[in-house]
Image 1 (cartoon, helix red, strand yellow):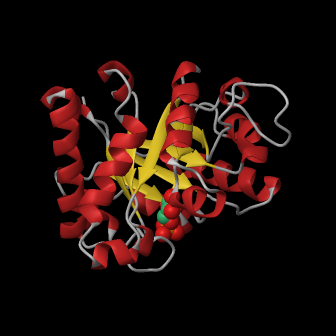
Image 2 (cartoon, helix red, strand yellow):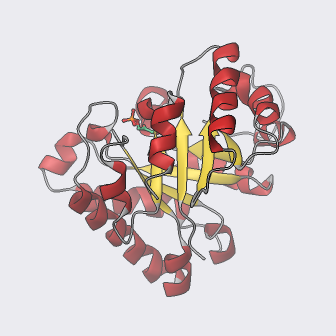
Amino acid sequence: MRKNVVAGNWKMNKTLQEGVALATELKEALAGVEVKCGVVVAPPLTHVASVVEAVKGSVIGVSAQNCAEKEKGAYTGEVSAEMIQSTGAGFVILGHSERREYYGETSEIIKNKIQLVLANGLTPIVCFGEVLAQREAEKHFDVVKSQVQEAMFDFSAADFGKMILAYEPVWAIGTGKTASADQAQEIHAFVRGIVAEKYGKQVADDCTILYGGSCNPANAKELFSNPDVDGGLIGGASLKAADFMAIIQAF
Ligand code: 13P
């Protein structure tokens, strides 16, 4: 069955102490509240194990923001999917546009990372989305289609079914410019359609597709009310417990 999820991508923000404090505040805010979606936080890697500890006993799942493309060995500075799994985290964000743009991540790299994440029993949250010039040139459907196909379609239906997808139009990330509810719905329905073509209707119906890009307490309800928008991947607004709580409660 399809699951609604609200995930907070903290990006490169918060010290360890600030991160643990935010996670603890969130845990306390969620206690005793009826939550109608999965809740995930993705702190920087240095904080993951401590945040796992801080949110124990709550509904909050913990995600990394990236992992290595290699399994293990002489790759100074890298952190493997197995290491992330060993912290107790359950998710890894992959293919974020910031990784594609600033760190040269290709679909091939993202695919390899998905493989390692799945092999370690973690859930990949795989991002894709067009840049402004591509939308203006009306190429957004083509761009999204090839990103999804290249990174995610070389897997079995069973493995694909373990992934969470996240549509993040790059022009909406951190800009305050949100995709309209209609724009989000249009792409999400399109993605669900190509998933149905590849893996069949049941897999497509069960697939969680999040929206990301300037999602906030004021627009979350409208975005999430779309039939094909199954939650959000939240950047800036996930850094304040009250804002993130308000987005969670938009369900
Ligand atoms: P903002 O919510 O800050 O626009 O970031 C979205 C994002 O990139 C989440 O991964």
